[in-house]
Length: 352
Image (tube, rainbow, N blue to C red; front, side, top):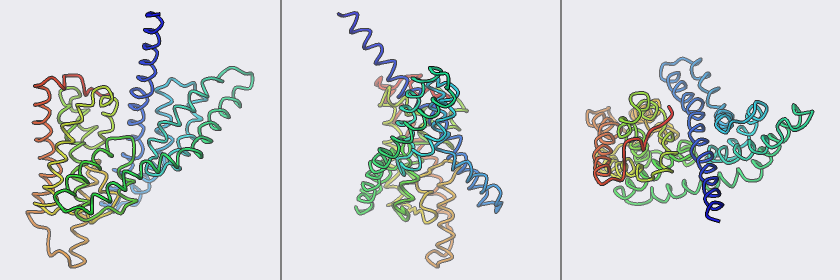
């Protein structure tokens, strides 16, 4: 009996590792290779006034769903026909999932991949049966469940909107922490901020929270990941740490506590606002889109007469809130957690 129980536990661990570690790690890389790099390219195109770059970035961003789904299928060692069929599944799940698109892709691509693997090479008409089963199961479930996953993700947005009604100090903490957490989770913080039109002081707090997660993880995981991991997280995405967070949730404490500090500093001391595109509020330091958004907002305010000029205090606040404080605070908090044994070397190792 004990042997049977041990085997069952071993199988459970294998499945949990496959779906929540391997699949999530691959999905984060698929997201980086599409939406995030596309956003960086588009931002460069906009700022440098090169329409071609903006167009190329748009193509990359539009491939986010398929890219994530194929990455997940690759991690699950899906056969070629299953892997290629996941392109359609990823596109449907991401589109129907709205703000919860990445989470919908994760769940539905796993299910579709497993259904496809069940029938792969089992019939003489494999080239028809395997894609049919994979696409029909994944897209069919996307129509049924992806909108609900999107609604669940949007509930995070409703929480953010409630937070913005609080007084600046409390709002700074709540928005910074919530949006920062959303950025690291497999949901789209950028989509949530865009849908809510999150700008002004709340947008500034959102930028602070996202930067705390990205710069924070980049710094505290440097000993595990080196410069490659530093840039992958610092200007890419902290979502790369989700599999490690699942294994040891305590690694998330340092950047999250840092966001709870930088948020109110942004709102109460520097009055940092995001008056550029709302989507920039949820991008953090990804391709410096958040910082470019804040700068664009300054220019918009000057044009509208709400601001006379960009001051040294503005630049100081932007640099401190987005880069310096997240790095220093996360490092200090992480050092404390390492001292008490909550975090150890290797806990934040990523495949970047």
